Image (tube, rainbow, N blue to C red):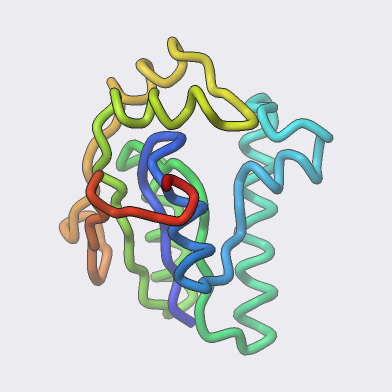
Length: 153
């Protein structure tokens, strides 16, 4: 199985890009909603990501060829567990980095159904580190602010 990981700020286009590419994705927000009834509940992140890893294992066991994780994964230490998981299970892992400026993400965020507070967005941007193949990814693709999706136009 190939494992894919998205990296980027909220409103950078991760979920939309995955959907438009026709890629099956396990979403950390969706897992939060299923587990607690609130997709913004950050207090259960350990349970959320443990659940996502179990779902990846189930998809691997079922013979699914490719699974994507739809999450912000902003810092290297947040990505490391997925890289280790892929290594442990003999999977290739690739990353798609949504390199979209904070101001553009704030603009998009303001018109979303679920708005992330601006202070939280700024804090996330401050801790974001761009991913690299040096972390253990087979590939890192970059989607920049010029990507136009049907959700933006």
